[in-house]
Every structure is written in structure tokens, then in C-alpha cells.
Length: 234
Image (tube, rainbow, N blue to C red; front, side, top):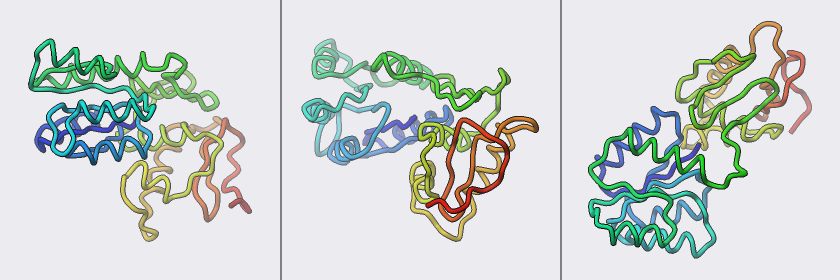
């Protein structure tokens, strides 16, 4: 899942980002309200962690602008001001939850999981590809009812593949989404991580879920025989 953190205090932003990435979220950050609003309006995020006291645009203005544009991404607001009036204002503007500073990361993570679960009830909390299941809340993967241990980057890559099941994903698309920087054609990091994922989710006798499209990228499907690369696709 992709989380946007809009926080101008560098240490706080780094603390949140590090913690969320350890929880296997893909995290983007913005250090002022305007930059955060631009990111939120031009990208898809599963949730936003939004500080109230921000330069350029305060958190209330960011939230007001998002809701005015019809953006319903769940928002967890952070504030050093813990008065009832502040909380009421944020909730009235469309915030999904409120957390006062200072806070323990465990509480932030729990509140974030809560708003992710209850936002848009029709949204599933699990992804399925063949007999492989990825739980987006617990961040566990299972196949044949056996838990699969994944690193943070392996989880982020597998989630991206499963969210785009049956779609061919170029190496450039994967690099920008999972590693958050431009693709270096000389790098084989994506191929290395795809190989690691395959070794973990495709045991002998199990169907192949991740297939390579030669010269293009990768695609995840419900499964078939381990027939190597797909040729002739663009």
C-alpha cells in the first residue's frame, strides 16, 4: 500500500517513513502543504498522514482542497495542538482520524490500519492470484496455507504485481513505483528481486505465477506451467 506523509519536521517525517517502511508500506513524503497537495492530487495513495502546522498551506487547507476535488483518500491528521476544537475542525473537514503529538509509532500504525480497513467497505484487504494470498493489513503472504516470509522490498514488489494482475508491467514502471526513482537500464535489481520472489512463491510442483515478457517486463497471472519467458509480446 502507498502512504503519503505530509510533514515539515524532518525528524518526525523520517521517523514515520522509516517505521512505515518497516511495516512494508511504500512511502512518499512532502515537506510543505502545497507539495503534499500536488502529490495527492496527481498520484494514487491508499492513505495520507497529514500534519496540521505546515508551511505554504496548512493541513486544514490541504484537506479542504482534497475533499473539494472529490479525493476521498483516508486522512490521518497529526497536530501538536490537541484541543477539542482542533479535532472537531479536522473531522468536520473530512479527516478520518486524529492523532496528537507526541505519539508512539505503534499507535500511529494501528490508527492507520484502522482507517485502511474501514475506508470504502467494498475495497478488499487481501489480494489473490491463483492460490497465493497477500494480506494488505498484516502484510503476510500465503500459498497452500503456508506463510511466506518477505523482505520489505519483496513485499512492495509482490503487492504491485498482484494489484496489476494480468497487466504487463515494464521495468521502468516497476522501478518508479517500488524504488521511487528512474530506471537505470544497466541495473539488474528488478530481475534479482523477481528471481527472489519466484523462489519464495513458486515451489516445485506449483504453478508459475510471475512470467517475464521478453524485452518488456513482467506480468502476474493466476498460474500455468513453468514455461519460461513469453515471446513476441509488447
